Length: 212
Image (cartoon, rainbow, N blue to C red; front, side, top):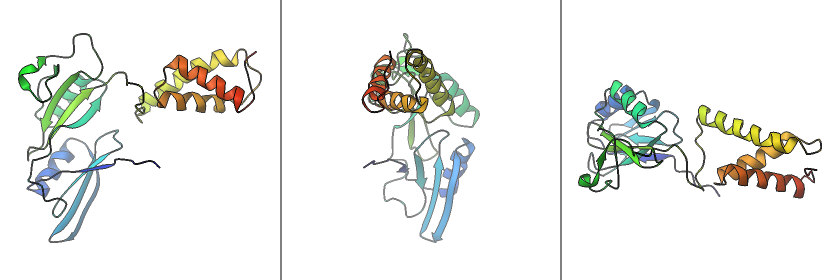
């Protein structure tokens, strides 16, 4: 059974101030529901994110501003930083290194070798709930792919390239079967070459189609 993490609750002191901040960032307003004078639920979703945030009266007993380092994964940290600043957020300079819990260990700028997972920046909402931008350009095995249109298009292009090599020597078959097997393997963390092998094995063992 899938267990999809979809909502994080933020403690805020002023519902309307928090709403104005996140709306100003350009995040999608999903709901603003007032049940009574003691309960109000406001939900926003960051662009391209499968998870949302909620806040409002009666949503949590935590002290306002007590949630820290919620990750926002981006493919270009400098571009993301500029966009957030343009929407009114105060964003730190980009930094790298093992300094998530120790500012003194942080080194200025992006990771010098452009290493994925190693470049960061941060900002906070008016209550002090903080967000951590992390640049990921290539995911480690076992991580699912982003649902973004550009990422999906790139993955489909990659799939088509690898399928072309299989199609050149295989008998007539339904291309979507090979695509599905390849995509499934890539989403499970396989490399492109390993995914192509897995797709070929699926076609041979399940669909009884093999390359000649």
